[in-house]
View 1 (cartoon, rainbow, N blue to C red):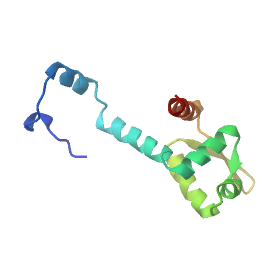
View 2 (cartoon, rainbow, N blue to C red; view 1 turned 60 degrees about the horizontal axis):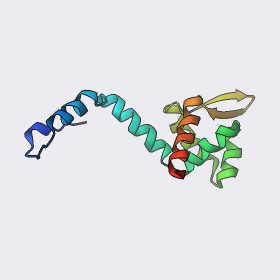
View 3 (tube, one colour; view 1 turned 45 degrees about the vertical axis):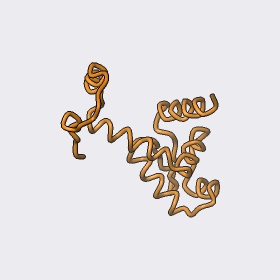
Length: 119
């Protein structure tokens, strides 16, 4: 990602000390990018429905497909992304993969978001 040097722009600045504090506390580029990917993943309605369903109990791909009314292939694609971002994990029981939320952080993120929009 290309960094823009704000100091070189002709932007008006009223409180330089606030700008300096914001720069000092800014996330590193990799952390900022990771957080953006996390929120982007959770921002897709079907992925969010999958996560919400998995907070109740683990489910297999075919049951999630039935729940969403989409193909198993479409669900598998979404689960692959969610797994890459460490939002879900899976376990195999015979030929069936069961998915669940990866940890309590994911559940808390969704609960906080819901609490925020209900205020």
